[in-house]
Image 1 (tube, rainbow, N blue to C red):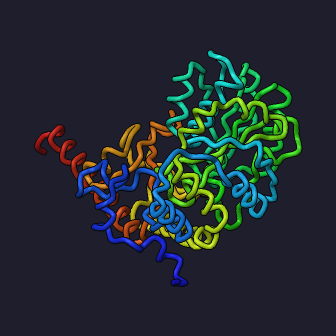
Image 2: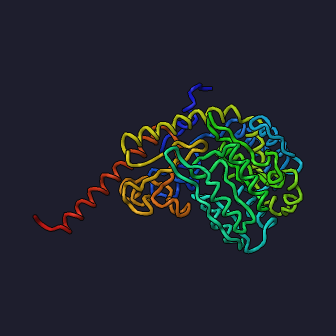
Image 3: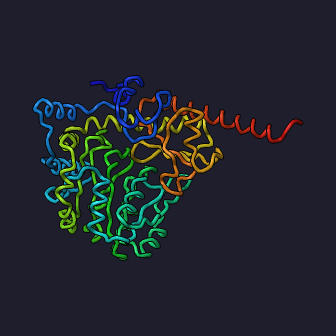
Length: 402
């Protein structure tokens, strides 16, 4: 096995990746460099590939059971976080978003208010409204060192009659990893205002060196005991399309998770359960190499933006593989993504989809070869130059001859 961690992100040429049939490589025309969808340009970890090949050779393509996945995750959580969840209480679900929706319908009532930090993962807004609950946006605070939790605002939002808080930790799209102090204060507020905590912890395995992920149910508080974590191997091992996740309750939330109907669990994929079990039990060496490569990439992106697009503000994330780019100084309005697409042929996520704090932002996926990051930044710089030239030309026509 190569000792170069970047091999994990350079295994495929752009032409080979273009043969993939996933959304990332099919949503744009072939001349667009896709950097939007949160999937990685990696091969499968060998233990995952082996588990899937074994299943294929056996014709093992039927309905899913959780099998040994809960125990596999519990072992991973103990090794990485010092958390010992009760594997027997975990429930198999197709994905984290399904788990959030199902759990919210168990612990809240129609019309209840659900607090979500903004900018926030776009499906949160859609699904909370879809099930008849109200989103209470609670903006993070931006600053010279990135984003942080606004605890004063969060208290006001809890006091407004909130019934639940959808805590995304690590946070998507900013990459913020909440500190133990922040989480302890969240727990204290939740106890004071009787707010249930749902913790989306899908990005936890992708926390960078220097950071520490703290599972919310592992805290010593009543709010943590009543909380439910939604976890998955999907993002860290690039297996989102295989469909498997877990709802993991704190000690006092076992009955709530047990209410998730078996029909929901049956919507998970057998390949997802098998791949996730392999990831949590045998996939840690691959994960370490991936994090080393992504760590370099997040720093490369910062250096290249500083060199070529200094008006864009970017703070390398503490977890995950997306950059949250503040493009407001470019003066392109609420959504810069179409400008980068039209003038630079690079596909980025539109910031406004993440809520009003995303106006003027784009999200860029850097889980790819370093050369593609360079190409993406060059294309973005080209878009800036072309857009500026077009604006100057339009201004000249409006001004008339001298």
